[in-house]
Image (cartoon, rainbow, N blue to C red; front, side, top):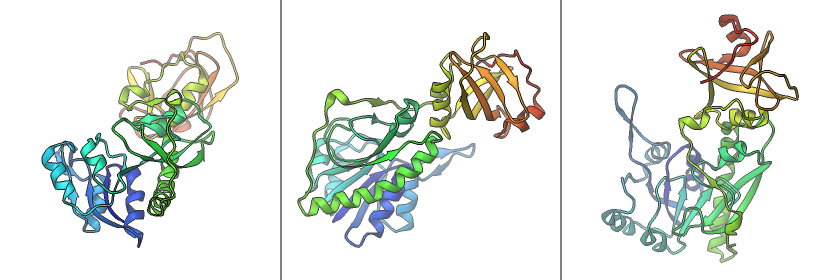
Amino acid sequence: MKVIFMGTPDFAVPVLQGLIDSPEHEVTAVVTQPDKARGRSGKLVFTPVKELAVAHDISVYTPKRVKDPAFITTLQQIACDVIVVVAFGQILSKEILDFPQYGCINVHASLLPRWRGAAPMQWAILEGDEKTGITTMQMDEGLDTGDMLLRTEVDITPEETGESLHDKMAALGSDLLLRTLSDAQRGELQPVHQEEEQSTYAAMLGRDTGHLDLAWDAVKLERYIRGLNPWPSAFTGYQGKILKIWKAEVLDRETDKAPGTVVETAKDSFTIQTGRGCLRIFEVQLEGKKRMDAGSFLRGVRIEEGEILCM
C-alpha cells in the first residue's frame, strides 16, 4: 500500500518505522505538527516523527491547520491508498477521511471505547485499570468514535509507570497496524461498532494534573505518582518549594494525624498520612534539585515527624 502517515510524538515513531521497514508498504508522505521553539535560544525543534521521516528522505508536511482547504488539495495530490494516524494532534475533516481507498486508520493506545482522547495510557493507570491495549480503528468525524478493527491487550502491572506502559504499547502498535493493513487488503476486516455507553474520556494532561491532594487515599496517590511519571509528574510541597514524588508504596496503616503529616522517617524513606492509609516515599525531587532517592534527600534536608507536606 501507498501510505500517508500522520503522527507527532515518540509513541508514533515505532509505527512509522514499521511501515518504512515493511516491503509491502511505501510511505509517500508524513504529516506532523509544526516545529516548536525550545529553550532560551528559541531554536526550532522537529517532532520525533519528523526526525525519523527526514532521516529516511520522506517528504514532510507541517500544516498549522490540517483542515485548511489549500492543504487538503495538496494532500489529495499525493499517491495514497490509506492514511495512518497515530497521536497526530489535530482532528481530520471529512474530505481527508474519505479520499483514500481504505480511508484513515488510527492506532489508539487503549481498549476502545474506554479512554478516548489525548492521554489514554496515563488515565488507565490513574484509574486503576488492570489491563489496557492497542486498538486500530476506522476513523470517522468523531473523537476516537470510529469502528474498531483489531485489538491487542496489555496487563498493567502494580509497578507500571506512564513511561514503562508507553514503551510496551508503542512496540505493539506497529505489529497491530501491519496486521490491520494486511487484513484490509485481503478484505478480511470485520469492523465492530463502539458501544457509546461504555466510553470514557482521557482528558489532556497538564502540569496541575500532578498536584497531589494528600487527603486522597494512599492507593489513589500512589497510582498518580506512577501514572504521571515522567510527565507531568506528581508533586506536593515542602517549606514553600515544589516537592516531586517519583516512587512510593501504600502502607495499610492509619494514624490520627492530618493528611500530609510526616509520621515516620527512616534511613531510606519517610512516611506520610493520607486521607486513608499511609504512603511510604522512596524517591523525590525538591525544586531546584536533582531527582534522588529518599535516603540521599533526608541526608540533605532534615524532615521531622509532625511536619506537614502541602502546596
